[in-house]
Length: 60
Image (cartoon, rainbow, N blue to C red; front, side, top):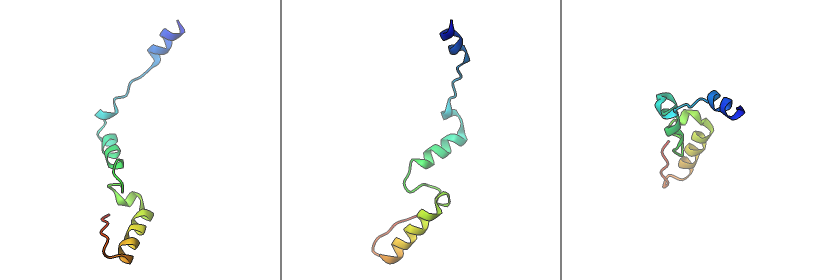
């Protein structure tokens, strides 16, 4: 009976139907992140790298 009660208490959330979640999830899959403003220290380091070595091309 405890198992039955627990199964009735469970909730399934389909996160793929939540547009906001999916946008954040997909953006987080990329390195560097698609929103560079979320990681200002990384952006500064990438800028410093490209300024020190102009032959390398790193986009932010």
